[in-house]
Structure formats: C-alpha cells, structure tokens
Image (cartoon, rainbow, N blue to C red; front, top):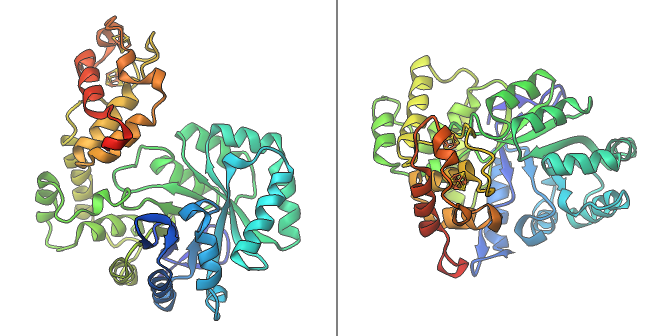
Length: 384
Ligand code: SF4
Ligand code: SF4
C-alpha cells in the first residue's frame, strides 16, 4: 500500500480508502448488509494496508455504522482512521448536533470518531449550519475528544464550495466528487486546488463516477482511445491512476461491493504514485473525456445563456441528464434523475415561446429536444 499526506495533518493515509456505502447486500435490499462477505472484504482491505474507513448516518438505510461496529472489532478499529457524517438534512436545531453525534458514537460503538463530516454540504445546509453556529459546538466536542477533526462532503456548484472552504479556518478535510469526467462539475479541479492550497486534505468520492467509467469494455470511442496506449490498463486503472497522479488528492474512496473490487483496487493502490502518468498518458485521459462527450447527442455546453426560461424549464439540467444517460447507456439512472427534477421545471412545461433558441450559441433545436427528452425519460418509476 502507498500512503499519502492528509492535508496539513501529520497523518499518513492509505491511497485507497474503504467507503462503506456500497457493501454487498441480501435480497436486493440495501438495508440488509451481507455481513460475512462485507466483513471479509473490509478485513482484507485493512490487512492489505487500507487505514481510512468512511461511512455516514444514512448509508445502507442506517445500517452501515452498525455493521462497522461489529466488523471493526478484534483490533481493526485501532488500525484505521474512522470517518462518519452528520446527516445535514435532518439538522433542525442546535440540540440535533449532540443528538446525532451521540447516536453515532453508540452505533459505531467507539469512544471517538477520527474525522466528523458535515454531510452533503450545499448552499442551504451551509446557511443552516452557520445560523446554528456549528463551529462553536464542533470545537467544544473536539476539545472533549469525541471527534478529532472536522470536515465536510460536498454536492453543489464551485462558488458554494469556495464560500465553505474559505468560511472557516479549521477544516481538516473536504470530500468531493472527482474523477476524470467531472473536472468542471461541482467542486471540480478548481475546488481540489483551492482546498489543497488552504491545507485541507481532499478525499475523493465517486472516483469511477458510480461505476460508469469502470465499464469494461467501455464504449467504442473510449476503447479506441485506451488502445492507443501500451499501458494495457483497465478502465478502472486509468481512472484511479489519474487521481493518484495528483498530489492534491489525499485518498480515494472506493465503494467496493465485491471481494474482486477489493483485490483489484488494492493491487492498483500498491503501485500508485504521484507523477505516475506521463504527459502522453494525461493527454490520453483528456481524449477519453472527449470521447465520452462525443457520445452525447445534444451539443449543450451548459452555458446557461438560455436561462431563465419564462416557464421555469431547467433546460441545461434536463439536457445534462439526457446526455449522461445516452453516453453511459444508463437509461434507468436517467429516468430516475429526470424524475428527481421538480415537476414545474421539467420539459413538458415548455410553451414553445422560442426565447431560448434565439440565444443558444450552439443553435440547439431546444424545443424539439425537450419533447424528445420528456418522451424518453418521463416514465413512471415502475417502468424504470
Ligand atoms: S421555448 Fe420553452 S424552454 Fe425555451 S424559453 Fe420558451 S418555454 Fe422556455
Ligand atoms: S443556451 Fe444552449 S448550450 Fe447553453 S445551456 Fe442553454 S441549451 Fe445548453
């Protein structure tokens, strides 16, 4: 295993972290963790050098922390930095901070947590935490030893990330969605650099974009790109080595759901290093990103010049969902994502006024495409 610096702390953290959010389950029920298999996996990972384990209040229908309390017995707890997260969306009043922390210490059956994160931070949660003065509370609990470091995980746009990172001086870490496709999405490359410059450890989640860029074989244009290299790496190896190549990345969390994932990731992490990629390798990764983009049927650049739509249609978001579904052949996920858009912002609210088409620099036939997207993705959940 290779170990890396954890921001400005003197911790040496394994290049590979164990994310306890996609554990093997029984009967297709995410609340029923297959404990013998999941325990064997986490023990194998720790015996292979993994020393960072990440969970959260809500993972596996609130069973992940309870599972870890059992899986980390017999000395395993002492071998890892344990991270869990406050469920931000459930925090209504100051008393909730203690309510969740105490419950989590009990669920995990530990006397302290190494890294406590404010989960899924966005503009709304950030405002709420500031109003409730989470930092005064957190500093008291850290002084009492109940958790040792404070961080946050993030899902919003870069300007919000910047506000959060610069809004408190003692963050130890930030957990961001980052992979070679998402360099301009959410915190992105800019967020990675900003956090690292300010001494935060950056923990990467979704390194394989929910498994989409791990597909082997990948779509033709991507396969043709990788074939230009003599590396012979798998799509997973390209994705992870690209991350580990970057000095700003502290550890990469992989949500492993089978022992073969653990073995593959351990082998890759053992060979990982900063600067492993050549300039030619990095250029090829850029090509793979473009190859995925070339599979997108709507040439929308997300510039947002078409907003606001007088009928509130979320045009770029809708096109983003459709493009992602098409390029990764992930239509089930696409229907789920489309149905997560507010009803009043979906494509069928378009009155065909034409204002957006008049300003779109890509000359997209927006009205026609909105009709296509709605027809394709607006299906009942039961059909998904
Ligand atoms: S054509 Fe439809 S999507 Fe475009 S601005 Fe008008 S209502 Fe909005
Ligand atoms: S103006 Fe065109 S390219 Fe820009 S976000 Fe709207 S649809 Fe996409």
